[in-house]
Length: 281
Length: 288
Image (cartoon, rainbow over all chains, first blue to last red; front, side, top):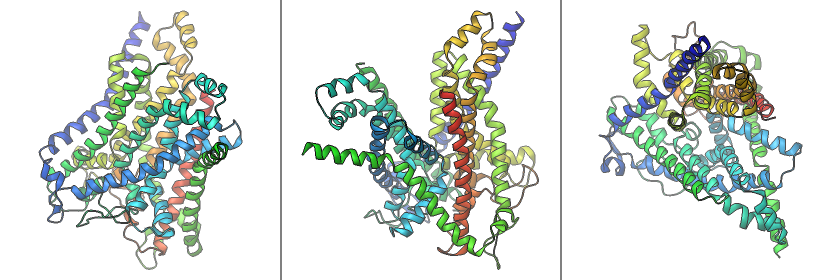
Protein backbone atom coordinates (compact mmCIF):
# COMPACT_ATOMS: atom_id res chain seq x y z
CA UNK A 1 0.00 0.00 0.00
CA UNK A 2 2.81 2.31 0.96
CA UNK A 3 4.60 1.79 -2.36
CA UNK A 4 1.42 2.61 -4.22
CA UNK A 5 1.08 5.83 -2.26
CA UNK A 6 4.67 6.82 -3.05
CA UNK A 7 4.00 6.19 -6.71
CA UNK A 8 0.87 8.29 -6.63
CA UNK A 9 2.69 11.20 -5.00
CA UNK A 10 5.62 10.97 -7.42
CA UNK A 11 3.37 10.86 -10.48
CA UNK A 12 1.45 13.88 -9.25
CA UNK A 13 4.70 15.78 -8.80
CA UNK A 14 5.81 14.80 -12.30
CA UNK A 15 2.49 16.03 -13.67
CA UNK A 16 2.86 19.44 -12.04
CA UNK A 17 6.49 19.76 -13.14
CA UNK A 18 5.41 19.10 -16.71
CA UNK A 19 2.83 21.83 -16.34
CA UNK A 20 5.65 24.23 -15.44
CA UNK A 21 7.00 23.66 -18.94
CA UNK A 22 3.66 23.99 -20.72
CA UNK A 23 1.91 26.82 -18.88
CA UNK A 24 4.42 29.55 -19.88
CA UNK A 25 3.97 28.56 -23.53
CA UNK A 26 0.24 29.14 -23.23
CA UNK A 27 0.86 32.38 -21.31
CA UNK A 28 3.30 33.73 -23.90
CA UNK A 29 0.97 32.98 -26.77
CA UNK A 30 -2.09 34.43 -25.08
CA UNK A 31 -0.26 37.63 -24.10
CA UNK A 32 0.98 38.18 -27.65
CA UNK A 33 -2.40 37.43 -29.19
CA UNK A 34 -4.28 39.60 -26.68
CA UNK A 35 -1.97 42.62 -27.05
CA UNK A 36 -1.20 42.22 -30.71
CA UNK A 37 -4.35 41.29 -32.57
CA UNK A 38 -5.73 44.84 -32.54
CA UNK A 39 -2.62 46.08 -34.39
CA UNK A 40 -2.96 43.61 -37.22
CA UNK A 41 -4.95 45.32 -39.93
CA UNK A 42 -4.66 45.13 -43.68
CA UNK A 43 -2.98 48.53 -43.60
CA UNK A 44 -0.41 47.35 -41.02
CA UNK A 45 0.53 44.39 -43.22
CA UNK A 46 0.63 46.27 -46.51
CA UNK A 47 2.16 49.69 -45.85
CA UNK A 48 5.61 51.12 -45.20
CA UNK A 49 6.73 52.19 -41.70
CA UNK A 50 6.27 55.89 -40.90
CA UNK A 51 7.53 58.35 -38.23
CA UNK A 52 10.79 56.50 -37.57
CA UNK A 53 8.79 53.26 -37.49
CA UNK A 54 6.48 54.49 -34.71
CA UNK A 55 3.48 54.16 -37.00
CA UNK A 56 2.58 52.72 -40.36
CA UNK A 57 3.10 49.12 -41.36
CA UNK A 58 5.65 46.35 -41.66
CA UNK A 59 5.38 45.46 -45.35
CA UNK A 60 9.12 45.76 -46.15
CA UNK A 61 9.99 43.48 -43.21
CA UNK A 62 7.51 40.85 -44.37
CA UNK A 63 8.75 41.01 -47.98
CA UNK A 64 12.36 40.90 -46.76
CA UNK A 65 11.77 37.83 -44.61
CA UNK A 66 10.00 36.03 -47.45
CA UNK A 67 12.76 36.79 -49.95
CA UNK A 68 15.46 35.58 -47.56
CA UNK A 69 13.48 32.42 -46.78
CA UNK A 70 12.83 31.57 -50.45
CA UNK A 71 16.48 32.10 -51.42
CA UNK A 72 17.77 30.11 -48.45
CA UNK A 73 15.51 27.10 -48.89
CA UNK A 74 16.15 26.86 -52.63
CA UNK A 75 19.87 26.55 -51.90
CA UNK A 76 19.77 24.32 -48.85
CA UNK A 77 17.08 21.85 -49.98
CA UNK A 78 18.79 20.34 -53.08
CA UNK A 79 22.20 20.15 -51.38
CA UNK A 80 20.74 18.70 -48.19
CA UNK A 81 18.68 16.08 -50.03
CA UNK A 82 21.66 15.01 -52.16
CA UNK A 83 23.75 14.71 -49.01
CA UNK A 84 21.00 12.62 -47.40
CA UNK A 85 20.87 10.40 -50.50
CA UNK A 86 24.59 9.86 -50.22
CA UNK A 87 24.40 8.97 -46.54
CA UNK A 88 21.40 6.69 -46.85
CA UNK A 89 21.94 5.00 -50.22
CA UNK A 90 25.64 5.08 -50.99
CA UNK A 91 27.72 5.55 -47.84
CA UNK A 92 29.41 2.51 -46.37
CA UNK A 93 29.97 2.12 -42.67
CA UNK A 94 33.48 3.52 -42.64
CA UNK A 95 35.56 6.30 -41.15
CA UNK A 96 34.49 8.87 -43.77
CA UNK A 97 30.81 8.30 -42.98
CA UNK A 98 31.54 8.58 -39.27
CA UNK A 99 33.30 11.91 -39.87
CA UNK A 100 30.44 13.20 -42.03
CA UNK A 101 27.95 12.37 -39.30
CA UNK A 102 30.09 14.06 -36.68
CA UNK A 103 30.39 17.13 -38.92
CA UNK A 104 26.59 17.28 -39.26
CA UNK A 105 26.15 17.09 -35.48
CA UNK A 106 28.66 19.88 -35.00
CA UNK A 107 27.20 22.03 -37.74
CA UNK A 108 23.87 21.74 -35.91
CA UNK A 109 25.47 22.92 -32.69
CA UNK A 110 27.31 25.99 -33.97
CA UNK A 111 25.76 29.07 -32.30
CA UNK A 112 23.62 31.15 -34.63
CA UNK A 113 25.70 34.29 -34.06
CA UNK A 114 28.85 32.39 -35.10
CA UNK A 115 27.07 31.59 -38.37
CA UNK A 116 26.58 35.32 -38.64
CA UNK A 117 30.33 35.91 -38.26
CA UNK A 118 31.08 33.21 -40.81
CA UNK A 119 28.60 34.66 -43.30
CA UNK A 120 30.14 38.09 -42.79
CA UNK A 121 33.65 36.74 -43.40
CA UNK A 122 32.85 34.51 -46.38
CA UNK A 123 29.86 35.98 -48.22
CA UNK A 124 29.80 39.66 -47.33
CA UNK A 125 33.53 40.36 -47.46
CA UNK A 126 35.49 37.54 -49.12
CA UNK A 127 33.01 36.89 -51.95
CA UNK A 128 32.03 40.56 -51.90
CA UNK A 129 28.25 40.07 -51.97
CA UNK A 130 27.90 42.94 -49.51
CA UNK A 131 25.19 43.02 -46.86
CA UNK A 132 22.43 41.55 -48.99
CA UNK A 133 19.59 39.08 -49.30
CA UNK A 134 22.01 36.70 -51.02
CA UNK A 135 24.63 36.78 -48.24
CA UNK A 136 22.00 36.36 -45.50
CA UNK A 137 20.21 33.56 -47.35
CA UNK A 138 23.41 31.64 -48.00
CA UNK A 139 24.39 31.97 -44.33
CA UNK A 140 21.00 30.65 -43.25
CA UNK A 141 21.09 27.87 -45.84
CA UNK A 142 24.28 26.48 -44.30
CA UNK A 143 22.75 26.75 -40.86
CA UNK A 144 19.72 24.72 -41.97
CA UNK A 145 21.71 21.99 -43.75
CA UNK A 146 21.95 19.65 -40.72
CA UNK A 147 18.21 19.88 -40.18
CA UNK A 148 17.38 19.17 -43.84
CA UNK A 149 19.90 16.32 -44.05
CA UNK A 150 18.61 14.64 -40.89
CA UNK A 151 14.92 14.81 -41.80
CA UNK A 152 15.50 13.82 -45.45
CA UNK A 153 17.62 10.92 -44.34
CA UNK A 154 14.85 9.75 -42.03
CA UNK A 155 12.39 9.96 -44.92
CA UNK A 156 14.66 7.99 -47.29
CA UNK A 157 15.35 5.43 -44.60
CA UNK A 158 11.65 4.75 -44.10
CA UNK A 159 11.22 3.59 -47.72
CA UNK A 160 11.18 -0.24 -47.47
CA UNK A 161 14.28 -2.04 -48.72
CA UNK A 162 12.08 -4.39 -50.80
CA UNK A 163 11.07 -1.45 -53.06
CA UNK A 164 14.71 -0.96 -53.99
CA UNK A 165 15.35 -4.66 -54.49
CA UNK A 166 12.34 -5.06 -56.77
CA UNK A 167 13.55 -2.22 -58.96
CA UNK A 168 17.18 -3.34 -59.02
CA UNK A 169 16.17 -6.91 -59.89
CA UNK A 170 14.49 -5.58 -63.03
CA UNK A 171 17.87 -4.32 -64.16
CA UNK A 172 17.29 -0.66 -63.30
CA UNK A 173 20.45 1.19 -62.32
CA UNK A 174 21.02 2.38 -58.77
CA UNK A 175 20.50 6.08 -59.53
CA UNK A 176 17.37 5.37 -61.60
CA UNK A 177 16.00 3.34 -58.70
CA UNK A 178 16.63 6.23 -56.34
CA UNK A 179 15.18 8.74 -58.78
CA UNK A 180 11.98 6.87 -59.68
CA UNK A 181 11.31 4.64 -56.67
CA UNK A 182 12.96 5.92 -53.51
CA UNK A 183 12.64 9.70 -53.89
CA UNK A 184 8.91 9.79 -54.78
CA UNK A 185 8.13 7.63 -51.77
CA UNK A 186 10.28 9.76 -49.49
CA UNK A 187 8.90 13.05 -50.81
CA UNK A 188 6.28 13.73 -48.09
CA UNK A 189 8.90 13.30 -45.37
CA UNK A 190 11.36 15.53 -47.19
CA UNK A 191 8.70 18.20 -47.68
CA UNK A 192 7.76 18.12 -44.01
CA UNK A 193 11.39 18.70 -43.09
CA UNK A 194 11.73 21.50 -45.62
CA UNK A 195 8.67 23.35 -44.31
CA UNK A 196 9.88 23.05 -40.72
CA UNK A 197 13.21 24.49 -41.85
CA UNK A 198 11.44 27.38 -43.56
CA UNK A 199 9.68 28.21 -40.31
CA UNK A 200 13.01 28.17 -38.45
CA UNK A 201 14.72 30.34 -41.08
CA UNK A 202 11.90 32.87 -40.90
CA UNK A 203 12.44 33.37 -37.17
CA UNK A 204 16.24 33.58 -37.07
CA UNK A 205 17.81 36.89 -36.22
CA UNK A 206 21.46 36.48 -35.25
CA UNK A 207 22.71 35.01 -38.58
CA UNK A 208 21.28 37.91 -40.58
CA UNK A 209 22.38 40.67 -38.18
CA UNK A 210 25.56 41.43 -40.12
CA UNK A 211 24.78 39.67 -43.41
CA UNK A 212 21.38 40.87 -44.64
CA UNK A 213 19.33 42.93 -42.22
CA UNK A 214 18.94 46.68 -42.37
CA UNK A 215 17.58 48.99 -39.69
CA UNK A 216 15.33 50.75 -42.15
CA UNK A 217 15.06 50.69 -45.95
CA UNK A 218 12.67 53.20 -47.51
CA UNK A 219 11.85 50.97 -50.50
CA UNK A 220 11.16 47.32 -51.24
CA UNK A 221 14.10 45.12 -52.36
CA UNK A 222 14.71 45.07 -56.11
CA UNK A 223 17.42 42.44 -56.39
CA UNK A 224 19.12 39.80 -54.26
CA UNK A 225 22.03 42.19 -53.72
CA UNK A 226 19.87 44.63 -51.74
CA UNK A 227 19.85 45.00 -47.98
CA UNK A 228 16.45 44.25 -46.51
CA UNK A 229 14.41 44.68 -43.40
CA UNK A 230 13.39 41.35 -41.85
CA UNK A 231 10.59 40.61 -39.40
CA UNK A 232 12.64 39.15 -36.52
CA UNK A 233 15.28 41.87 -36.79
CA UNK A 234 12.57 44.51 -37.04
CA UNK A 235 11.03 43.15 -33.83
CA UNK A 236 14.42 43.37 -32.12
CA UNK A 237 14.92 46.95 -33.30
CA UNK A 238 11.52 48.28 -32.33
CA UNK A 239 11.53 46.57 -28.95
CA UNK A 240 15.02 47.69 -27.88
CA UNK A 241 16.31 50.60 -29.96
CA UNK A 242 13.38 52.92 -30.53
CA UNK A 243 12.15 55.01 -27.61
CA UNK A 244 8.41 55.66 -27.22
CA UNK A 245 7.52 52.86 -29.56
CA UNK A 246 3.75 52.16 -29.37
CA UNK A 247 3.34 48.83 -27.53
CA UNK A 248 0.63 47.45 -29.77
CA UNK A 249 2.81 47.78 -32.89
CA UNK A 250 5.56 45.72 -31.22
CA UNK A 251 3.07 43.04 -30.19
CA UNK A 252 1.53 43.19 -33.65
CA UNK A 253 4.93 42.55 -35.23
CA UNK A 254 5.61 39.67 -32.82
CA UNK A 255 2.18 38.20 -33.59
CA UNK A 256 2.73 38.46 -37.35
CA UNK A 257 6.04 36.62 -37.00
CA UNK A 258 4.43 33.93 -34.84
CA UNK A 259 1.55 33.49 -37.27
CA UNK A 260 3.99 32.93 -40.16
CA UNK A 261 6.07 30.46 -38.14
CA UNK A 262 3.13 28.53 -36.70
CA UNK A 263 1.19 28.31 -39.95
CA UNK A 264 4.28 26.72 -41.53
CA UNK A 265 4.46 24.24 -38.67
CA UNK A 266 0.76 23.42 -38.94
CA UNK A 267 1.14 22.91 -42.68
CA UNK A 268 4.03 20.50 -42.04
CA UNK A 269 2.00 18.57 -39.45
CA UNK A 270 -0.91 18.41 -41.92
CA UNK A 271 1.28 17.00 -44.71
CA UNK A 272 2.78 14.47 -42.33
CA UNK A 273 -0.54 13.14 -41.11
CA UNK A 274 -2.14 13.21 -44.58
CA UNK A 275 0.54 11.05 -46.12
CA UNK A 276 0.82 8.81 -43.08
CA UNK A 277 -2.80 7.83 -43.58
CA UNK A 278 -2.27 7.17 -47.30
CA UNK A 279 0.88 5.17 -46.81
CA UNK A 280 0.48 1.72 -48.34
CA UNK A 281 3.16 -0.12 -46.39
CA UNK B 1 24.68 8.12 -72.47
CA UNK B 2 22.55 6.96 -69.60
CA UNK B 3 25.64 5.55 -67.95
CA UNK B 4 27.45 8.87 -68.22
CA UNK B 5 24.53 10.71 -66.64
CA UNK B 6 24.37 8.14 -63.86
CA UNK B 7 28.08 8.47 -63.29
CA UNK B 8 27.96 12.28 -63.17
CA UNK B 9 25.03 12.30 -60.78
CA UNK B 10 26.61 9.78 -58.46
CA UNK B 11 29.76 11.91 -58.30
CA UNK B 12 27.61 14.94 -57.54
CA UNK B 13 25.89 13.03 -54.74
CA UNK B 14 29.25 12.05 -53.33
CA UNK B 15 30.40 15.69 -53.30
CA UNK B 16 27.12 16.71 -51.65
CA UNK B 17 27.81 14.04 -49.05
CA UNK B 18 30.90 15.96 -48.05
CA UNK B 19 29.24 19.39 -47.65
CA UNK B 20 28.92 19.11 -43.89
CA UNK B 21 32.64 18.46 -43.52
CA UNK B 22 33.47 21.23 -45.98
CA UNK B 23 31.40 23.79 -44.09
CA UNK B 24 32.64 22.85 -40.63
CA UNK B 25 36.19 23.25 -41.95
CA UNK B 26 35.30 26.52 -43.71
CA UNK B 27 33.68 27.97 -40.59
CA UNK B 28 36.70 27.04 -38.52
CA UNK B 29 39.03 28.47 -41.17
CA UNK B 30 37.26 31.83 -41.39
CA UNK B 31 37.06 32.19 -37.61
CA UNK B 32 40.73 31.30 -37.32
CA UNK B 33 41.71 33.68 -40.09
CA UNK B 34 39.92 36.57 -38.36
CA UNK B 35 41.35 35.63 -34.97
CA UNK B 36 44.97 35.23 -36.09
CA UNK B 37 45.09 38.85 -37.20
CA UNK B 38 43.91 39.73 -33.69
CA UNK B 39 46.39 37.49 -31.87
CA UNK B 40 49.27 39.01 -33.81
CA UNK B 41 48.55 42.29 -32.06
CA UNK B 42 47.13 41.09 -28.77
CA UNK B 43 48.48 38.56 -26.30
CA UNK B 44 46.38 35.37 -26.15
CA UNK B 45 46.66 35.15 -22.37
CA UNK B 46 45.55 38.76 -21.90
CA UNK B 47 42.58 37.93 -24.11
CA UNK B 48 41.39 34.81 -22.27
CA UNK B 49 42.23 35.91 -18.72
CA UNK B 50 41.92 39.70 -18.95
CA UNK B 51 39.21 41.13 -16.72
CA UNK B 52 38.41 44.21 -18.77
CA UNK B 53 36.58 44.48 -22.06
CA UNK B 54 37.03 48.11 -23.15
CA UNK B 55 37.13 47.80 -26.94
CA UNK B 56 36.83 51.51 -27.66
CA UNK B 57 39.13 53.10 -25.06
CA UNK B 58 42.75 54.01 -25.83
CA UNK B 59 44.58 51.74 -25.57
CA UNK B 60 41.73 49.27 -26.01
CA UNK B 61 41.41 46.29 -23.66
CA UNK B 62 40.13 42.96 -24.95
CA UNK B 63 39.93 40.71 -21.90
CA UNK B 64 37.02 38.31 -22.22
CA UNK B 65 37.13 36.79 -18.73
CA UNK B 66 34.05 38.76 -17.69
CA UNK B 67 32.24 37.62 -20.84
CA UNK B 68 33.18 33.98 -20.23
CA UNK B 69 32.02 34.28 -16.62
CA UNK B 70 28.83 35.94 -17.89
CA UNK B 71 28.11 33.08 -20.29
CA UNK B 72 28.96 30.58 -17.55
CA UNK B 73 26.67 32.24 -14.98
CA UNK B 74 23.70 32.30 -17.31
CA UNK B 75 24.33 28.78 -18.60
CA UNK B 76 24.85 27.28 -15.16
CA UNK B 77 21.70 28.91 -13.83
CA UNK B 78 19.66 27.79 -16.81
CA UNK B 79 21.01 24.23 -16.52
CA UNK B 80 20.17 23.99 -12.82
CA UNK B 81 16.58 24.87 -13.64
CA UNK B 82 16.15 23.10 -16.97
CA UNK B 83 17.83 19.74 -16.31
CA UNK B 84 15.71 18.44 -13.40
CA UNK B 85 12.48 19.88 -14.78
CA UNK B 86 13.20 18.69 -18.32
CA UNK B 87 14.06 15.13 -17.28
CA UNK B 88 11.01 14.88 -15.01
CA UNK B 89 8.77 16.17 -17.81
CA UNK B 90 10.33 13.66 -20.21
CA UNK B 91 9.54 10.81 -17.80
CA UNK B 92 6.00 12.03 -17.34
CA UNK B 93 5.42 12.28 -21.09
CA UNK B 94 7.11 9.00 -21.98
CA UNK B 95 5.87 6.77 -19.17
CA UNK B 96 3.00 8.22 -17.19
CA UNK B 97 0.79 10.52 -19.26
CA UNK B 98 -2.36 9.02 -20.82
CA UNK B 99 -2.31 9.20 -24.66
CA UNK B 100 -4.58 12.23 -25.02
CA UNK B 101 -2.65 14.35 -22.51
CA UNK B 102 0.59 13.12 -24.02
CA UNK B 103 -0.33 14.44 -27.47
CA UNK B 104 -1.30 17.77 -25.95
CA UNK B 105 1.97 18.06 -24.03
CA UNK B 106 4.08 17.06 -27.00
CA UNK B 107 2.47 19.62 -29.28
CA UNK B 108 2.95 22.22 -26.54
CA UNK B 109 6.66 21.47 -26.47
CA UNK B 110 6.90 21.50 -30.27
CA UNK B 111 5.18 24.87 -30.19
CA UNK B 112 7.71 26.14 -27.65
CA UNK B 113 10.59 24.92 -29.82
CA UNK B 114 9.30 26.89 -32.77
CA UNK B 115 8.95 30.28 -31.04
CA UNK B 116 11.76 32.49 -32.45
CA UNK B 117 14.30 33.50 -29.84
CA UNK B 118 13.73 37.20 -30.50
CA UNK B 119 10.07 36.75 -29.55
CA UNK B 120 11.08 35.00 -26.32
CA UNK B 121 13.47 37.86 -25.64
CA UNK B 122 10.78 40.45 -26.22
CA UNK B 123 8.27 38.68 -23.97
CA UNK B 124 10.98 38.29 -21.33
CA UNK B 125 11.63 42.03 -21.47
CA UNK B 126 8.00 42.97 -21.02
CA UNK B 127 6.92 40.37 -18.45
CA UNK B 128 9.76 38.65 -16.63
CA UNK B 129 12.18 41.58 -16.30
CA UNK B 130 9.76 43.87 -14.40
CA UNK B 131 8.58 40.88 -12.35
CA UNK B 132 12.11 39.98 -11.23
CA UNK B 133 12.83 43.60 -10.40
CA UNK B 134 9.83 44.08 -8.11
CA UNK B 135 9.94 40.55 -6.66
CA UNK B 136 13.56 40.81 -5.50
CA UNK B 137 13.54 44.60 -5.07
CA UNK B 138 16.43 45.23 -7.47
CA UNK B 139 17.59 48.39 -9.28
CA UNK B 140 17.14 46.54 -12.58
CA UNK B 141 15.40 43.36 -13.69
CA UNK B 142 17.97 42.79 -16.44
CA UNK B 143 20.04 40.19 -14.56
CA UNK B 144 21.74 36.89 -15.18
CA UNK B 145 18.97 35.25 -13.12
CA UNK B 146 16.32 36.56 -15.53
CA UNK B 147 18.40 35.31 -18.45
CA UNK B 148 18.78 31.90 -16.83
CA UNK B 149 15.02 31.57 -16.33
CA UNK B 150 14.28 32.42 -19.94
CA UNK B 151 17.06 30.22 -21.31
CA UNK B 152 16.03 27.28 -19.14
CA UNK B 153 12.69 27.57 -20.82
CA UNK B 154 14.31 27.65 -24.26
CA UNK B 155 16.48 24.60 -23.56
CA UNK B 156 13.44 22.61 -22.47
CA UNK B 157 12.32 21.28 -25.89
CA UNK B 158 15.80 19.87 -26.60
CA UNK B 159 16.16 18.24 -23.19
CA UNK B 160 12.61 16.89 -23.03
CA UNK B 161 12.35 15.47 -26.53
CA UNK B 162 15.79 13.82 -26.65
CA UNK B 163 15.42 12.41 -23.11
CA UNK B 164 12.00 11.12 -24.05
CA UNK B 165 13.46 9.30 -27.06
CA UNK B 166 16.10 7.76 -24.80
CA UNK B 167 13.48 6.65 -22.28
CA UNK B 168 11.29 5.10 -24.94
CA UNK B 169 14.28 3.32 -26.49
CA UNK B 170 14.70 1.22 -23.33
CA UNK B 171 13.69 -2.35 -24.34
CA UNK B 172 10.23 -3.27 -23.08
CA UNK B 173 11.55 -6.59 -21.77
CA UNK B 174 13.43 -4.71 -19.04
CA UNK B 175 10.25 -3.07 -17.82
CA UNK B 176 8.08 -6.17 -18.09
CA UNK B 177 10.72 -8.13 -16.18
CA UNK B 178 10.70 -5.66 -13.31
CA UNK B 179 6.91 -5.38 -13.25
CA UNK B 180 6.58 -9.19 -13.26
CA UNK B 181 8.76 -9.32 -10.16
CA UNK B 182 6.20 -7.14 -8.38
CA UNK B 183 7.85 -3.73 -8.68
CA UNK B 184 5.51 -0.77 -9.02
CA UNK B 185 5.58 1.33 -12.15
CA UNK B 186 7.50 4.05 -10.33
CA UNK B 187 10.08 1.61 -8.94
CA UNK B 188 10.57 0.24 -12.45
CA UNK B 189 11.05 3.74 -13.83
CA UNK B 190 13.48 4.74 -11.12
CA UNK B 191 15.52 1.56 -10.80
CA UNK B 192 15.39 0.09 -14.32
CA UNK B 193 14.43 2.65 -16.95
CA UNK B 194 16.44 5.60 -15.60
CA UNK B 195 19.81 3.77 -15.48
CA UNK B 196 19.22 2.23 -18.91
CA UNK B 197 18.29 5.57 -20.47
CA UNK B 198 21.04 7.52 -18.71
CA UNK B 199 23.52 7.87 -21.62
CA UNK B 200 20.75 9.26 -23.85
CA UNK B 201 19.55 11.60 -21.11
CA UNK B 202 23.11 12.81 -20.61
CA UNK B 203 23.36 13.54 -24.34
CA UNK B 204 20.08 15.46 -24.13
CA UNK B 205 21.46 17.55 -21.29
CA UNK B 206 24.67 18.32 -23.19
CA UNK B 207 22.74 19.36 -26.30
CA UNK B 208 20.51 21.56 -24.14
CA UNK B 209 23.57 23.22 -22.59
CA UNK B 210 25.05 23.72 -26.06
CA UNK B 211 21.87 25.46 -27.10
CA UNK B 212 21.98 27.75 -24.05
CA UNK B 213 25.62 28.78 -24.52
CA UNK B 214 24.99 29.64 -28.16
CA UNK B 215 21.73 31.49 -27.61
CA UNK B 216 22.07 35.11 -28.66
CA UNK B 217 19.03 37.31 -29.16
CA UNK B 218 17.04 36.51 -26.02
CA UNK B 219 20.18 36.74 -23.90
CA UNK B 220 21.14 40.08 -25.37
CA UNK B 221 17.68 41.47 -24.67
CA UNK B 222 17.29 40.35 -21.04
CA UNK B 223 20.66 40.05 -19.28
CA UNK B 224 21.55 43.75 -19.18
CA UNK B 225 24.85 43.51 -21.10
CA UNK B 226 27.20 44.91 -18.46
CA UNK B 227 30.71 43.58 -19.05
CA UNK B 228 31.56 43.08 -15.36
CA UNK B 229 32.31 39.95 -13.44
CA UNK B 230 29.07 39.55 -11.48
CA UNK B 231 29.07 39.08 -7.71
CA UNK B 232 25.58 37.61 -7.55
CA UNK B 233 23.01 36.22 -9.93
CA UNK B 234 20.96 39.38 -9.47
CA UNK B 235 23.38 41.56 -11.40
CA UNK B 236 23.51 42.31 -15.11
CA UNK B 237 25.97 40.22 -17.12
CA UNK B 238 27.12 40.12 -20.67
CA UNK B 239 27.67 36.89 -22.57
CA UNK B 240 30.10 36.13 -25.40
CA UNK B 241 27.28 35.74 -27.93
CA UNK B 242 25.65 39.04 -26.97
CA UNK B 243 28.98 40.85 -27.27
CA UNK B 244 29.46 39.69 -30.85
CA UNK B 245 25.89 40.49 -31.81
CA UNK B 246 25.83 43.91 -30.17
CA UNK B 247 29.24 45.20 -31.27
CA UNK B 248 29.82 43.77 -34.74
CA UNK B 249 27.39 46.22 -36.29
CA UNK B 250 29.16 49.23 -34.82
CA UNK B 251 32.80 48.39 -35.34
CA UNK B 252 34.93 49.30 -38.34
CA UNK B 253 35.57 46.32 -40.63
CA UNK B 254 39.20 45.24 -40.41
CA UNK B 255 39.89 47.00 -37.09
CA UNK B 256 41.40 45.16 -34.14
CA UNK B 257 38.02 45.26 -32.40
CA UNK B 258 36.46 43.55 -35.43
CA UNK B 259 39.06 40.79 -35.30
CA UNK B 260 38.65 40.47 -31.50
CA UNK B 261 34.99 39.62 -32.10
CA UNK B 262 36.08 36.84 -34.47
CA UNK B 263 38.35 35.56 -31.71
CA UNK B 264 35.32 35.37 -29.38
CA UNK B 265 33.51 33.51 -32.15
CA UNK B 266 36.37 31.03 -32.31
CA UNK B 267 36.19 30.44 -28.53
CA UNK B 268 32.43 29.81 -28.83
CA UNK B 269 32.94 27.48 -31.78
CA UNK B 270 35.50 25.41 -29.88
CA UNK B 271 33.30 25.20 -26.76
CA UNK B 272 30.20 24.09 -28.67
CA UNK B 273 32.29 21.67 -30.77
CA UNK B 274 33.50 19.92 -27.61
CA UNK B 275 30.02 19.82 -26.09
CA UNK B 276 28.45 18.38 -29.23
CA UNK B 277 31.23 15.87 -29.62
CA UNK B 278 30.60 14.57 -26.09
CA UNK B 279 26.84 14.52 -26.68
CA UNK B 280 27.26 12.59 -29.93
CA UNK B 281 29.52 10.01 -28.29
CA UNK B 282 26.89 9.36 -25.62
CA UNK B 283 24.06 9.24 -28.15
CA UNK B 284 25.90 6.60 -30.15
CA UNK B 285 26.52 4.63 -26.98
CA UNK B 286 22.85 4.78 -26.02
CA UNK B 287 21.85 3.52 -29.47
CA UNK B 288 23.90 0.37 -28.95
